[in-house]
Image 1 (cartoon, helix red, strand yellow):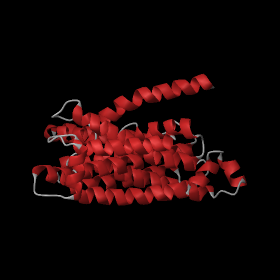
Image 2: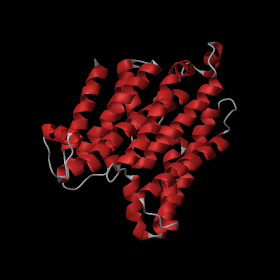
Image 3: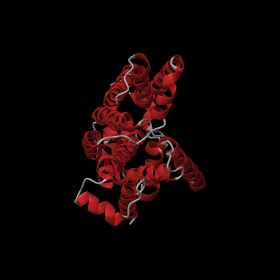
Length: 323
């Protein structure tokens, strides 16, 4: 029942995303323009701006939520989040280098820089954390925190070197679904769908891993393989999402925690539910961001933080009361 409610909420929010803005459209008119595009301004806006925006919100919401589930399963910590591997910090630093050092402002170019930065940061964390050794997850998290702190310092320094670029970097770091074209939305969606499908495939292995590595070995799990695939998935999903829309707070932390409270501890069910709930959170945040200060727009990451922080506090408080 909860999954059906999430599906219906996501559909309703997707329709709202197509209708809200200037011009404001009715659902019937939006669907008409989707089926029969014409040369009107409204049709151009729906097809070139609002559809890619809604698609990205759905894909990125699912990616961050699933990456959060995998991260929390690997660390056996329900309050872990995928940014602990330094992916967000790496992407931010790469974008700062593109803006300040290389003078690159084209979005498609910064998309590649952000993804490359996320991957390089994850590789550095993996090397420092000692992938392949026992208990490497703990070292990976510590290495991720250290690398993230260093990269964040570099990003801040680059921002101060060229104050004119500071606003651009800050806008990117707060997250936005605006000004993304259809090819970008499709490319991001394909990568994320592949990552989500692979994550569901290792769900049974994650179920064993959350019992502890010794118990997982005893029950026949290939712990190094599951762990390696999980880490690659986090980089792929979180790196792609961050490159596309910037760092978005709380989705990868809140959604798995909230879903677990409803569907239980089975990782396959948590992954499936997170694929639905993540887009609901991001679509709702985007609709709020576009309406609260219309015709202006709030940063998406700020809205997810405002929505996510109270819910997370309530969930943690409820968890403490139950224990």
